[in-house]
Image (cartoon, rainbow, N blue to C red; front, side, top):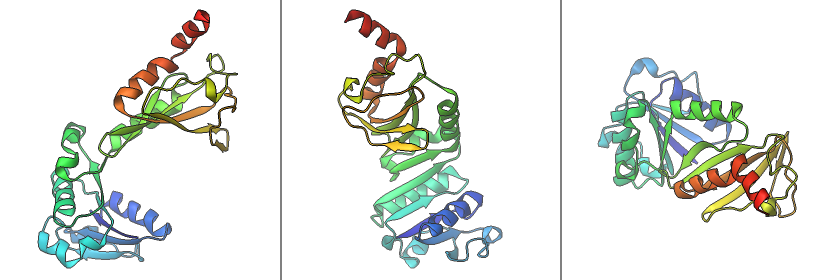
Length: 228
């Protein structure tokens, strides 16, 4: 797959390196000649140009890229690149980097953004996931916030330990997609038992996430068992 990346700084180059290793054809665009380091990712195509210029995007045939990544250090540039990619070239998937969390509200479908990545938010989620046991943690959003990937780690004293997947009462528009148990990745089946330290990964929309948070809380589970 051909992927265009606007921004050949440290972030753009790192993304390019990963994508090349996955076997993709990568195009890196940057107007700053100091950032053009073809030796860093020799397999990529490097273009010295302004990715906000429509003529430049036409010249590199952006319409041939199923995915465009706006990864510059300037949120204004990332929004312009995203909008051009979506509206002028019909790119199917546009991923944009958010540098300033205060601009996060702008990175939506109105600006052509399918997936917005905020480094501070991602890092905060990873820290929460690493240290939080027993509470639901949002790891990331999909498709402009229409669905979220959320996680809960079951502590040894969580009431759900010892029950089965079939006992998990899920809200509407929620799916348990996998159970991480040590080095194992388990596809949930109704009779799969839940164990201490299991990480449950769910996909849910915003409304369902709040319901799931309440349902999965140890206090709610304790009350539910007491009622039975």
